[in-house]
Length: 239
Ligand code: DX5
Ligand code: ZN
Image 1 (tube, rainbow, N blue to C red):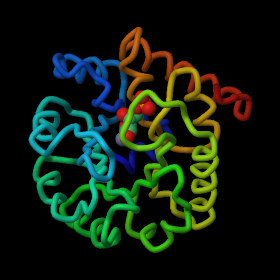
Image 2 (image 1 turned 90 degrees about the vertical axis):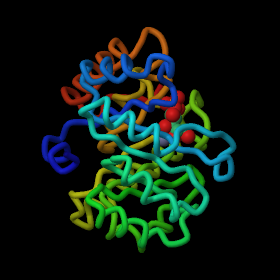
Image 3 (image 1 turned 30 degrees about the vertical axis):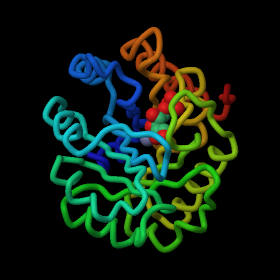
Image 4 (image 1 turned 120 degrees about the vertical axis):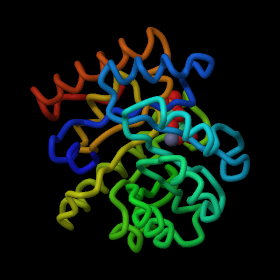
């Protein structure tokens, strides 16, 4: 799925379910699927790496059973190692650990790949790209946080977007066209075009998709903005 998305050059839109209407999650999943989302993003928090708590492995299994979209699980867990097996068994198609939180990020990636899922690595806005050097050969997804992890509804940090763009360029220079760079946080219909113009492969959006006027309209507006950028590359400005 990831490989075919990269080949198609389609910008990946992944709604973050922590911002969906949790009392109506089945309908929200159907809505984003019909509207043309490419994956669903499940944020997992442990109250330590980040202050809050969200979904666990049981919730991931329920989401997986309710959608045909790939389920991407973002682990915001201090020491994720003991929890990988549960999320893989729950059906995570992509499993992402934080480089700042893993004891051994390379080993995590190998465990995820061996289980048949796509291994990914995430980094906080304040973490330098150099930290990824040794793990990059083992992952196919880099999630560049464009807000501080743990909370939805924050404004996008431009410096983090610059970093995502530098990573795209570095991966190109390495010939790594199997790695998708996805930004997470602060993405809205009004800035997704400018983000795509930086060359990143996709974006996670919570408030920007599930906020008013609702997921279907927001995803349609995002696709519209993305088409405009495709027509006139370089013209977009982050708002
Ligand atoms: C934050 C999460 C994000 C969050 C994004 O820790 O990783 O996925 O849901 O929410 P918005 O799009 O509102 O910034
Ligand atoms: Zn996330």
